[in-house]
Image (cartoon, rainbow, N blue to C red; front, side, top):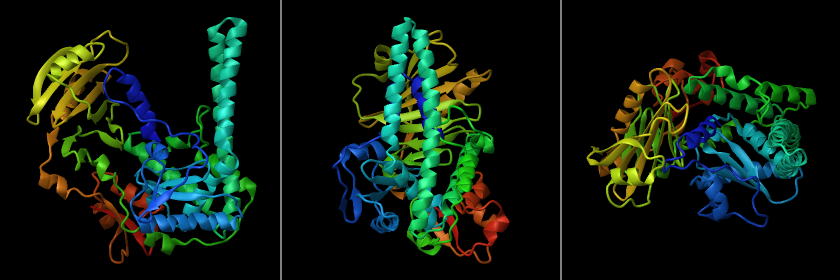
Length: 475
């Protein structure tokens, strides 16, 4: 995902700060663990929930999704126990963990068009599990490391070892792409055996491609940037996946299940969980912590359980998080005595009526990082951090714009926090309403028509107008 890529960059840029980047998902889970239920909502083992997130608290939706998964398992004659769980996340994703966990996010459910596409996502992930792809990658990765160490030892050259490691990791990425194509081929077979239309795998790829195009637009990148094949990519480009499916020659009619699918997802949240706060346009609002701030006008905000990332059109960066760790004494003293390298120009100030401190990363402490500012704000028993970075010829002015954005931080009143609600997906009959009118109602600042088309899996307003039932988003 785009967010994960940039979050790694932020971790590197702000290594001296108190904010931490998110962890990678594990490649395997311990065998013998199981999923229980509380009121019909799956309860994941703590070790897995820490890595993948919590289940979405909607028993009816969880039951429907599990029924679809179990139908796929029975129809394809698979052995073993599988659990299908909706994660309470708005990002578009699906993944699996041994021995039989298959996860799908709310974000993916929102962009899929019917039950067959959901089954296709499950079939692809089950293909990874049955072929033990994660274990194979782990062994291959270990082989690369061992070969690199052996080469460095035999030649007495670290440079040679690094070269072997680099070549091996590039080969490993090609291997990962081959596994993705294999999971597609195997998954189509599972789909057909379970009675679903074989074309659902290809249309699933189309949905993912459309979503990637939207994410690229949100970041100011070319919409077709995800169609470009890269030697370092771990996933094949969409056109490669579809070409491989066509070459496999599997074609069968079957169920779509659109009506049941739309009924199941109607009313589902498309926002972040309240415990993570909401990104609404340029604003971040957290109803539980009762805090808010607003990013600069050209910024996009991305939410993750570890913090908020803001990306400007000129690639300026804003990273925000809060910590429950106590900071005794003055914040400017803590910044002066704890952060290394010690920030320059530290000043005590107030932001939103609360104690705050601002400092700059000293010039010459590292290279190529432009202007960097650290902003700390005391919020009740917590300390909240803004890490700000601007590069390029306009960096001096832009860093001040970012500092001013940090100064919009404030505490929400109890009434303001109580009024915050997640956006919801609604399935409507749009007779008498034009696509332009539907798009204008979406609670987003821009790209409304693009969002509406992708949400419904169509390419043009004319195609949207022909749909009898349309997905939309309401506050």
